[in-house]
Length: 341
Image 1 (tube, rainbow, N blue to C red):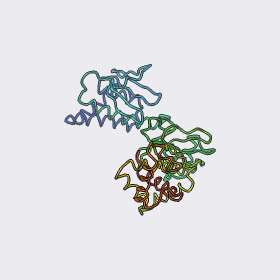
Image 2: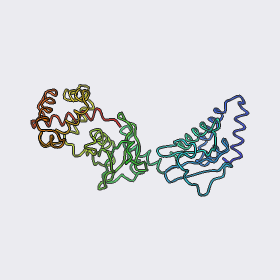
Image 3: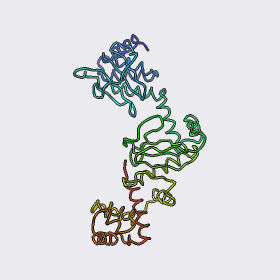
Image 4: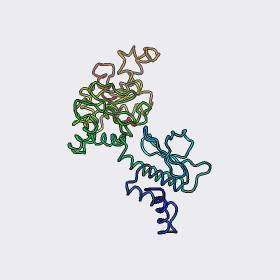
């Protein structure tokens, strides 16, 4: 759609309903373009017509801009952050309007509808958006095996083994890109990423799923998410393959409707004093009570008294070998139930 046709469309909308608000005309204008599968450039020109300003967007390495007359810039640059009003188009992507001075009454609406239209257009055409959609299909157990197999072929991971990695979406080390997608889960927004067999894992707090064929990607993703939920600041990386029987226990706990008494006891201790959690985790990691005392700089007798009190409130002796195992499992289940991202 060229500039003249866009201007005619605005005129037709106004003529059809001269008493309609400007906002409704903006919505109708962009809805018409989206329904017609308008390109990203056409959507920018539309926003330029409505605002009389230069308009642009950034999506990964793609930067596109048109000037106030609707002409596409040959060599657009990424604007300095905060210089122009902007709106998110997708993860790490945004559009802007080059309005100097006070905003006009419909600038916010134009920017919002432009961003909505760009997101739909880019999801059909941008390689990164297409890759993200295929990754969503690959890890979704509700998708058919044929759909997941096709997604694996498009992602070129249909041969060999892979593992899914889960990381908090807000983690600065979990950069967006074609190889990852943010998933809304019951424990928050989590980034899913594929790692091929033999490749190193991303950095930061994360859970490593089981190494499996692409056909079992949902299982790898499920175990990666469980591993992430078991992680702590002291143990930021958890590998599902190293959990052994703990993985089965975590999966069983997810489906159980019965409270676990040891976990409830830890919850009460943490509610009374959040420092109790660090003390319990220290007791699991330290070789002995004396080593735990030395690592925190407290006297051995003071630590002994603290451990006796914690043991009494937990209902078992955390100094025995059986008690340490029991405490370790209870702490894992406590983190599984309480970690949010």
